[in-house]
Structures are given as C-alpha cells and as structure tokens.
Image (cartoon, rainbow, N blue to C red; front, side):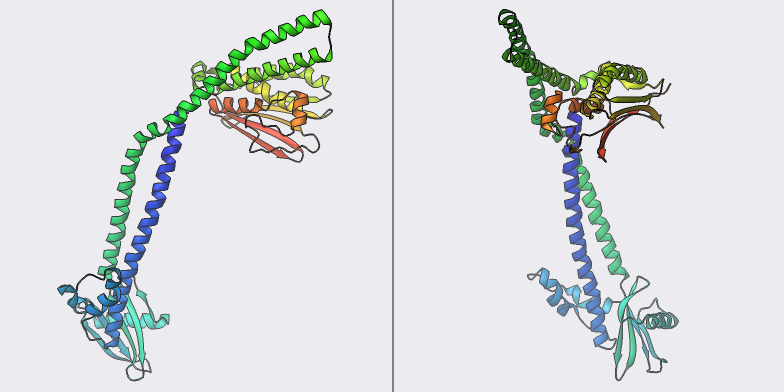
Length: 420
C-alpha cells in the first residue's frame, strides 16, 4: 500500500509539473517564433516598399516591435545593419509574363537562373505571401508601373535561431523535470506517511474493536439462553439472539476484510489447485440452492492452478457463489464457470436479478454497499462480502469486474495461470 500511495503521489506531482512545463514552454516559443516571423516580414516589406534597395529598418522595427516588449531598451549600434545584412533578391515581370529584371546583388549564393525558377514557382502557386522550400520568405508585389515583382529573403538564420531556441527550451525543461523527479521521489515517503499511519491505525482499531466486542456478545448470547431456559422462548429473546448473531457475523466479516487487506498474507502464498477449491465450493452450495428452489449450474475445468493463498481463494469462491445464490430470485438459474483462457484462469459467476433491482457497478465493491437495503436485511447481507472479495483479488494481483445488463449480473475474476 505504501508503494502504491508513493507511486500515485509521484505520478500526480510529475504529471502536473509536466503539464505546467509544456504550457509555459509552448507559450514562450510561440511568442519567440511570432517575434522572429514578424521581424523578417517587417524587413522584407520595407525592402518591397523601397523597390529592392537596402535601407535602415532597425529603428522603426524596434519602435514598433521590440519596444513593445521592452520599452526601456536602447537602439543597438548593430541594429542599423539589419537590412544591409539581409540576403534578398527579386525578379520583376511584365504584364505579359516576361522577365524584366533579376537582381541577386544581395544574395551571392543565388544565381539568376535560380531566382527565375523560384519566381516561376511562386507565380504558379497564386499566393501573395509565404515560404518557399522552407528557407525563403517571399512577397509578390504588383504595381501599375513596375508590373509584378517577386521579392525573396533568406530566413535560414532566423529559422536556425528558432530551432535552437525551441530545442534549448525543451532540453532545459526536460532537465528541470528530471531534477524535480529526483527530488520528489524521496519526498513522497514523507508526504504519504500520515496517510499510511492513519490507515494502519484504522485497521488496528477494527481488529482491536472486533476482538473486544466478541466477549460481551458471547456473554449476551449466553445470558439470553439462560433466560430462555428460565422463562421460556418469546419474541424478545428471539430478537436478542438474532441481533446478537447478526452483530457477531458483522464483526467476523470486518476482521476478515481487515486481514484480506494486509500485505503480510502474501508470505503464505503457494501453488493453489483452484479447480479443486471451486469444485468443493460448488458441492457445498448445491444443497443450499436446492432448498431455495434455485438451479445451480457449474462447469469447472480440471487441473488448473494459480499462485496464491488457499484459504483466501476458497473465501473468494464462497463469497461470489453465496452472493449469486442469495440474491437470485426463487426458481431462477445460477451459473459458475472456471476455465483457462490464454495464460489466465477465468472464474465467472452470474445470476438473474430480482425485478426492479438496479446495481451500481461502480460502487458494488464499496464497504456496506447494498443495492436494495430491505432485501439485503432479509437475506442477512451486510455489504461487506464483495469488499472482501475485492481485497482478496487485489492481494493476488488479479482483476475482478462486474457487468449488469438485461436484468442479469455477472462477476468475472482473472487470475494468472500457474504453468508447470
């Protein structure tokens, strides 16, 4: 239980931290990418406005973009070289589509033929702005006097800067997350300690109270028998005896549940012939089903074994079959199946529900849950049996599920098959 609580604590903390890191890094990277994209767009638009002549756009850009984020910053001496260091070229067309001018003076790595090919590719797309081949940003300018001009600017450096920014931030975020994980793991032990201590005290209280209550209940039962011998049977003595027996059974079930949840029982795990145990349970309930006018059908595959506690497995089979027989309507059918499926052993019990009974499958394993209180009292139910079954299954690292459909309920337990 301690390991499970620590694991859940660590998972909750680390999942929250991861979500926070992702949100923060995403927001920061979006802002950085937005600024860099606007920067290159602003520079290219100024070049277009100046008909392809390099001009100083740094001051205007800082006033319109950078100063918005940092109004106290001054203009860097290097900023005046922004447009001059930009690598751009353009291709101008006549109205009939013939090339008039190809200017690659500010892009030494681009030839005139490359520039024409790029421009033709852009014209075919019909887009006014965009990226070409992931490296060049372009703008198509149309004027009455100059015709159609396609301006290109190499933004590879900005893309590299954005890539470095994104990878660096992700790396830093991951490293921070790992460091947090290293710190949270030892801290989780201290964090769950109060919960563990309260749980242990609660179980100890149930055990101690159960044992302490046994003695006065035994005395009450003995005194009731003496009074019956002295004054004869009557409804009051019968009521006292019934309620005393009921309370004794309830205490017994609470003690069984507390023991089933204790991890120490795993020390007594061994090979369990589950087929023999289930067959014996079916045999013991055959007479019970007949007396209540119910038909019990069972199919048990022989020689199946699992790893577990023999008494607990017997208790589990008894609880499931008792629950099915007890709450099935008179004259109905109760089914039990035990079989091998792949590398698992499947134990199933099913029965018809009484008319009007609805079962909350999400709460059926909760302590003291009863789908119909009046009926449960008549049949002697306390709402603890299935809680015990759930605890036994959990201790065996198995899985139990319940389905309720078409006025029928089915419990399914999946064990890991023990193969020779």
